[in-house]
Length: 83
Image (cartoon, rainbow, N blue to C red; front, side):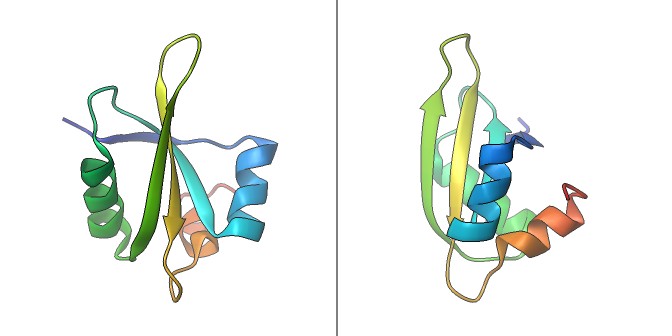
């Protein structure tokens, strides 16, 4: 099961990268917060402080991942070529 499907590149999500040190992903419907945290930490070699998930009205699940101090969401967005 692939936990992280793709990063979300909306204007609001980009603002969270810059101001809140958070990055937003579209995730698998069955992924838990622990699964998402483990996947982000393993894939990008960063520390995660918090994971918040939400389900969309039209289906789909997204996760807002807040990184711990010392880890930068901007570095992840650069690796993903978001900006």
